[in-house]
Length: 155
Image (cartoon, rainbow, N blue to C red; front, top):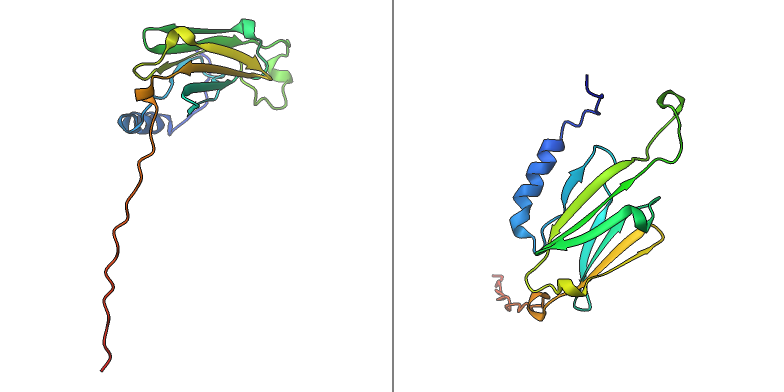
């Protein structure tokens, strides 16, 4: 008999919404693969011509995390292990999750994957990848048309 899992009635709707939003995003979201439990929060943004990806991995050490690139796919995987042996019935409250995870992100065309740099500080993994000049978004000015004013005459 399998383990009891928490009931999440809207999980499928959330997955469907993410799939529907995907074509409208420049970078694809990280794919989520892992046990029910620990899944690090991830953010990605462009700064100074580089793609920066940050993952919150509190309680982990760099030796517990693996970063790899195959083709144009960035993969971050690891495992957050529980160091304490506490029986389930001894818990009063448990909000911390443990387990293995794997997150993947499709990189934009022209990303210089051979120049990737990964750093770890205070439980945050930061991965920096130089982008090709064509991949960096440029700001487009918006021109506003003048509104026509209609004079209303009072009689």
